[in-house]
Length: 176
Image 1 (cartoon, helix red, strand yellow):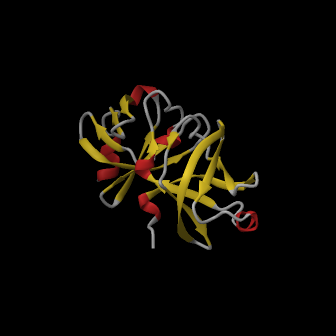
Image 2 (image 1 turned 30 degrees about the vertical axis):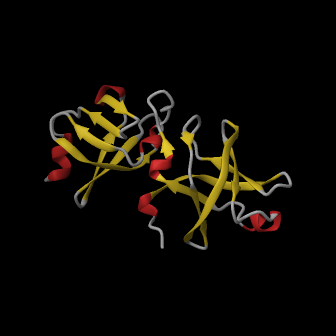
């Protein structure tokens, strides 16, 4: 069984497209403009991730992908999975500094703090109006850091690294 920690949700199955068996995946917010080139997609069916090999993946528009899957070609079968979450392997989502427009794209990035060094991996984004937080897994604890320009030193989309400089004491609150 595929572990959801090793993949990233990219959207949901919207509907079938045309007569050739393509399906439309409506992308999650924040993934507009990301390079998505999966060899496999994983569709959540009844709580389990089912792998499907892709033949082609292309943008229909900025919010939707047209995907041709090797074994899912029947319009009726596509209708059965409409609304299902779609995942890809984290390495198949190419985030570059130029197309990084939303904090949700940072899920899976390694985080380095200028004072503490490596502190973990971003496991989610807590979207609070006017104050999004990045949730970082550090050992057995979760650290919340505001996603604010003044805390961000640099973002390296190619290497999936976020370097931050947090206010003194912020990280210490979670380590005590």
